[in-house]
Image (cartoon, rainbow, N blue to C red; front, side, top):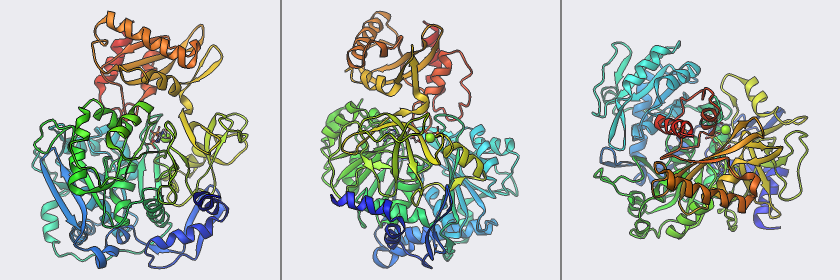
Length: 637
Ligand code: ATP
Ligand code: MG
């Protein structure tokens, strides 16, 4: 048995012994009396009786050894600012913010909604909440009033922490008017709003409710706020899923299990070591930002980079496709985390930019959030010369479900596969209608997780246990298993391949086709930058595939002769790879694809437009112009 097989088996056969051992990676105020309470599935409670604190583990614990080492490095190519906070400085900042929140009446268990750009103060606020036992609910900055209002209503925060504005590509996005409107729309009204004035946009303060953060924290400059010891099973935060497939779900997470899960993943998966620098290009509004910008690296004693700006913009706000690599060189980043969608943006830049900087500190680049297509993986792998590690997980899981356990044992990557099941996760492939487990290699089914789900996994849907059970645990007939709602296969070596979401399957004349497979075939064409395939209702065939392609070069989006030629080439490619049946009915060319704010394809919106239906909830749509372009392309025939 290989080292990892042994490790994995212990995690599934003796979960209590395994996770008791992992629990030593963090500090406990009081050790747990019971490692796992599985008496009420699917509500698994980890580290019962234990008391700890996320902020203590992220900051205080490191003061003895590394008080003057960098902890948080905040860089903005939007404002041209760059500042590094040592663990000691971060400790002071977080205590100031904690004191301000306490003064505003925030108590243990109260919610604090954080609607902030990617600035250091956003991380201070998260850590301050963790410190005093308040539940944070971070909402992606720049979400419009409607999305923000529904989250305020759901979370019922006592306090909202926000700022005058964010900035994107040099364009100021005022937050305050959006927040004011959201509070007006919401039935729940926060009692106080704490505002960071970055000097980017004017703010009108509402007397009695709005407070300027600078004045408030000056008053508490010398604040000493000890960590509140929390039960391991207390709630640390809630966060909403991306809303790619429907209405976002409020994912709720614990304290102790999450701390252990992150500490363990930093060691066994990311292989990040204390004193090194971690750079995740995500946003604190997403789960990756929670786990691997703020908590994970800090718990591991690493410095973490918070980056505000485009991947293609320099400190002088001039175009610079090499800015991330410059930061890797400057801060000697050892572990980097990004998303395929960001790499596709970089792919349009000069590849020489990847060779311009000294990237010798970098050990690996992790990518997650979406399927990693082979051309993108190869491009970045050739360019960086370090392992590219795909990792598959969800907001719900909090940390990778399927990837490679680099810290336990080196395993070769396989293109197209995020890897093997991580310790603690009993990943299974089951038949969608019979619920039967598919054990033979390469049989396609739904990817599910058998309980007990590991530490760090969601506790429930915030204030809606019933939705948690019914949505996630009751979708496979006859079995209480957690459904990921993704299709997948497992090969003979235990490597999984994710084949798209369960609602992304189309049925052409009785044949079931995954849109992801068709997209893979299309993205192999040299002139395809991005592609989305959706199934569209068809009177004759039931459904047909429609492809929307962003060409890399040329004018296919506007020049019909060129479009016709490229469409023919793409059709042929799909027919050669997958068979004539999989050939899309049409290939249409657009300048960009509709995506969520987290950069995921919004296939359901494209499909609705093709079927002349109302596209439904568009609050998570990033750029309305992209959907407009899809509409125009469909209308043009
Ligand atoms: P919602 O559940 O609200 O529709 P969402 O599923 O997009 O939104 P997230 O939790 O951010 O919200 O995304 C998780 C999903 O992203 C996974 O279920 C999977 O479909 C996809 N995904 C994440 N990582 C990968 C990966 N490495 N390869 C393939 N797909 C991935
Ligand atoms: Mg999901």
